[in-house]
Each structure stands twice: as C-alpha cells, then as structure tokens.
Length: 618
Ligand code: ADP
Ligand code: MG
Image (tube, rainbow, N blue to C red; front, top):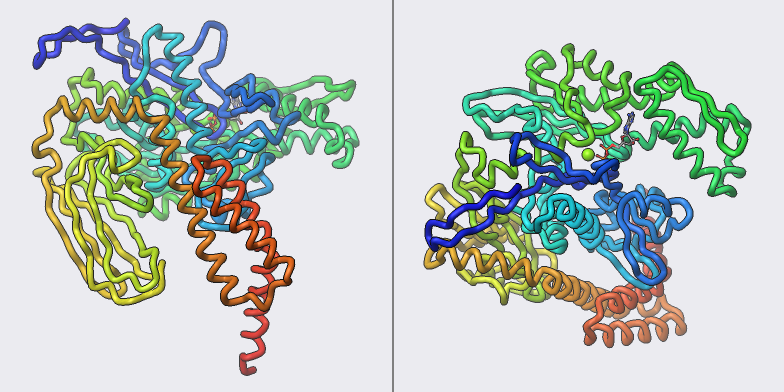
C-alpha cells in the first residue's frame, strides 16, 4: 500500500513512492522493501518462487534477452551467449582480469589495454554496465509486477572494496535500467543494518561481516560510531565460494564412479547434470546427514562428513583471510562485538562453526543469509525516504559534481547524495605531446554529456613543463566544506604547479530545478549512455590510430610489406568507422587492427629486450 502525501510547497497531492533496496550480486540478485504495514524489511517474490534472481543474462539468436532462472539453463549448452558473473567485470580493464580469463566461458575482448572490458556476443559488444543494467531492469519489472506500482528509486549495494569507478559503473547501470540510484552502500553495511546494528544514535561497535557467496568471499571489519559506518579493513578471495564446493563434490563423484576428465568434457549434459546434483547435495547436507541420487544410472552418494572433509581446506582459507582482516584493522578478535553471516554458503554448518570458533562467540545468522544484504538496503532506503523519523538525514549534495573529460563527457568526482563535508580526487593527464596548459571545467548534474549539465566554474592550469602526452600527472581534487562551498584544485604533481577556484554549487538553483535535472537524467538515460559509449569508443579508436602511427614511424623496418599494407588498410577502415555513429563497428575495427599489429608489436618488444641484454655488461 502506498501512502498519499501533500506537497506543502505546491499544495498538490502526491503518491509517495516506494524506494527499493537492491542486492546486485555476482551469483544472485534480489529486491527488498520495508513493508508499509508491519514496517519490517521483506524480500520481494512471486507466489511459490524464490526471491533470488540468478545474475545471468542469455542472448538468443534474434537478440532476445532473458535474465534469471531461464537464462541459467543455457550456461552449459550455450556458453558463448550466456553471461554470468558480469559483476566481476565492473570497472575493470582486460589487464585487471587477464589472470582469470579462463574463468569466463564467453568472449571477453582481450585487447591487452587499460580500456574497460567488453563482452562480445555475436557481432554486438556489451559493457559490464549494459549487462548489469539488464539484470536491474528485470528486477525493476518484477518489483513493479509484485507491488503493482512503478518503481524508479533504489538503493543498490556493492562490495566494500569497490573503487570509485566500480561504484560509478553500478550507478550508471541503475540509470540505464530506469532507476534513480539514491545511494550506493556497502554490502557489509547493509547486512549490519538488517540486524539493526548501527541504528542506535549512541552506539559504538566493531563488527565483522563474513560473506561467502557463490563465487566470492569477503570479510569486512566495520566500526560503527553513532550511525556512521567506517570500513576498517576488507579481505577475501574473489575466486572462492559455494561454486568451488560444488566442483569438489563433482570431482569426488567422478573418482568414485570412475568417470574420466575426457569423458566429462565430451559430455556436456552429464557435466551439467553432475554440477546441479552437486549443488543439490551440498544444500541438502546443510540440514541432513546423507545424500543419495542417480544421474544417468550412475548412483551418487555423499555423507555430511565426507562433504565437510572436502570443504575443510577452503573453509580454512577463509579463516586465514579473517585473521588478515583483523590484523589490518588493528583490532583484537576479542574486540569484535558482533559477527554477521552473509551469503548462501554460510548455511553450511561447518562454515558457521569455523567462523564462530575463530571469533570465539556465536554468530548472527537468524536473518536469511542470501536476503540479508537486500533487506539492509531496504532499511537504508526507508531512512532516505524519511519514513524512519528516528534517523536524522545528514546534509547531502543534491546533484553530482564532476569535470569535463575527452569528448565532452562528464566525469563525476562527487556523486549526488554524498554526505557533506566530503572530498574526492582523481588523476588526469595530457593527450598532446608538449601540452603546457590544461583547462578544467566543473559541472553539476546527472547527464552523461557536460553540454546537458550546469557549468559551475572553469580553471586553467598553465605552466606545465613540456612532456610527452600521458606523462604529466594532474591531480584534480574537490572539497565541499560544511557550508556547502566547493573548492576545486588542480595540481601537476611532477612540477608542482597549482591552481584553485571556489564555487557555491547550490547558488541560484531551486528545488524544482534540481528535480527537473534529475527527471531529465532518467528520461534521457538510454540515449545518454549510448552517446557516452560512442564517445568512449571513438576516443579509444583515435588513440589506437595515434599509437599505431607512432609505432610504425619508429619500427617500419621490422614489418613485412604485407604487414604494412594490412595495417594501412585496417587503419583506414577504423578511420572510416570513426566517422559513423556505430560503436560496435568501431570496436570491431579496433579489434581487427589490434589483431594485425599484435605479432609485430611482440617482435619489436622481443628485439628491444634482446638488444638491451646485449648492451648490458656482465
Ligand atoms: P552471491 O552473493 O555471490 O550473489 P549468494 O549469497 O546468493 O551469492 O550465494 C549463492 C551460493 O550459496 C551458491 O553457491 C549456493 O549453492 C549456496 N547455497 C544456497 N543455499 C545453500 C545451502 N542451504 N547450503 C549450502 N550452500 C547454499
Ligand atoms: Mg552477495
């Protein structure tokens, strides 16, 4: 049931909109709200189904997209167009993930650069933001179907270790799905809130949040001081989770029944069936002693004891992480006031026991561990909605603040709804050789292109000593003090040249204008993000053309005639693609040029190394 309120300023009646909490997980995602009648957090679900939506996106031949249980069925049979674990790619470049590239069964573009990763399905390219937005859109639709009302406002959770770029990517995904993301909060913070920890006005506590999900393990140590959460340390393993338990069980069964590796890799159906049975067995053994089943006439058996000895080494690894986190937080185990259990895999009794033994106290496990993060996000959403009058909302920034970057894009330094005072900083560099000045233009607003936002100030950092493009390090910092004054500073770190300016962001801006800017950002989200993707693709393409040209200029003698011709053709094709409004085409041409240049770039590298060796005195 929605509430009706009266807007005092305009006198109009308005239906108060529900703000939902969303756990956008690596394995599973879900939505929760505060129930309007009993005021308790609840996870949303349709009759007779689970609240969990597998974070899996399937693309069929015609480009149709399905998300969730339905998509999960294609994991083994259509690995190239069934995307899982998109969250692991958020805000990452290929260099960041290349050590784990074999983990992904779909095509992740391996251009060996620092630009953000993309996933290729057929002849289309998707960013992790796109993929996450498909999941969020599905969650939004389900929530609307269940609540019978539009859902446009949300709080979304992210791991405590997510950096700025990953948080911004999550916000963008929300926006693309038609959601106004009021706040991004840390998963361990949300889990604590779901247990009511940190809700007291005068409360000082140290909390450990142990989160063992499907594919990841996180331990966070939090300090709560009068409603403010601070992350003291995080630790964990981004490739350790319940899926590893399943894998161990499959191997155990293979050994027992004499099934070989070659047999299993040739038989996809059997492989999938064993995987699913293993997960079933694991879950069953969380509350029973013995599991028995049959798959293709192979009889499978597993006792709780057998499972526990298989899992023991993995569990021990998580405990070692806990030890490290405690040390990094500079606290003693005895100082931890509460331990909160999060993630489906903490249902395993041996996990619970190991954790409570390590911390020397019983753990908090009364709230459903795979819903607890979403439930906490709903608690935070309710506070933001102002329904929880016990809680005072601190001063916040109503609109995002950022600067203009290449191609007229808005680069947000302080997202909207940040508590003030606050500060943020980021490093930038030049893109022309010998560039001696840099113009920094400050904007406010939620749109992706600065031309649609509100310009606040401009400063010109001059006197940068001549250096090759990319070498100067210009640190731009934003500081908003308690009075809401924004101080923007730019400093070239190698030479020390510095410049700053002060602005009052709220000056001359009414609540209605703020409201309109927010609305605009939602109605234009799709268009905006498409434009941003195009600008980013073009920038990447232009940079590749420049570096290739430079490289050929220096190393032409290393290339065969054929390679020279091929390169010239690929460069021309890319040049042409840059003039068109098609980001997928640009990515494709970038890929092609990269493929052509890779062999001779490697040759040049080898030669540089061997001539360096020759020159070295022994
Ligand atoms: P994530 O945070 O990575 O999205 P979840 O918290 O939803 O993941 O956890 C999913 C994992 O929990 C899966 O590996 C699943 O098999 C496991 N799981 C769910 N229920 C149980 C159970 N009863 N016993 C053991 N493991 C479980
Ligand atoms: Mg989770």
